[in-house]
Image (cartoon, rainbow, N blue to C red; front, side, top):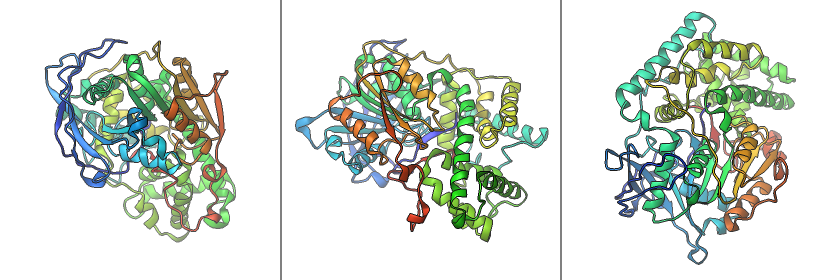
Length: 526
């Protein structure tokens, strides 16, 4: 599955402070945590962009929760304390997605977003807890296999010959080998179930009987895993942009290919609507043809010397994630196509990528579930989809996941989700979400009968709560404030229309565009 992760408020945050030990025993299924040896958390000052906004610490957890007295790793956590102690609601943990997304800055970030949409009073009732899952960011160790893997200019994602496909296979095989050599001891313990048990260790270290939780994207799967393993520890949970539990994980990336093809064509159609500004074509087909012409030219002569066809795909992919990118990316493409000015596109290039995020992404998904080990399966599925017209994302998604085909062990089986006696959960799903297609919202709703599903009709932005849709944001705030949920009904329990100004922005009304739209935006892979 394509990396589905939100941009944190801080790209990298160093952590200072003390250490808490929270050793969690094994839970073979829907059993209680046997957390022991909790000494509390010694909070210290955060560094980086979180300095002065939150307090930080490291919490030790077992590498293997079946061996609570064995080797330890540590989880970086941050906290923004509740200011309304009279109406205190407990701790609210946040996960931004991924797998591999850093969540440390989300303590301050979630408070800021809730306040920004008029619900600061709700945020004030919670201790908001951000954390970097095992292997991520400021947690120790931080997983990284080959920092040069994503350096430009990389081979074309779409192989035009067997030789080009073999080059990517060799590159992916080498990456998997590097991960095994450097972190073979950690990789078997990177399952989402391991992360969920870490979350329960954080809960225990904080002295809480239950947690509240807000998960975006892959964070919905982490939340669902926690609810499956520890249903008695759940108080309130919001899941926004839901993973389909039936497609974990190989089939999920195939479904994404179809959804991103739709969304990128919606963007092409939007560009055509404003041809007077961008001069890239007056129809969606014309804009699409222009894009692929620019892409082909970039293969022969990289844009600005650094952006080949794969880098160009990576950049504009984000327009399929979030409509906040519509204007700046259209401007950037227009500047290159019409003026041969690469500056704007180069600003969106992440030259070295994020190897930590990429490594954790592959590690978690490889451990979570079974993947095809025969390359013919990958090849044939990609060829079939590409021939069916899903050309934009199919091969790039193959190579983003391909290291898993060569992983040192076969993962899985995937955890069967679901639990009885859960409190009411709030699920939110945009109907034109490409990263987590709408079927995931309905399937997760079915899997957890105590949940209520709010559908954003026509919404094209991935994980779109707290982004300016008052209908969505008010329902989230009401639930976090009092536990209020929509009444149960067949299908989606409540409907919200996408906000036209956000869903289809009008560039003629925007004097200075940026890639910000209410909150930090979701991004594609680095």
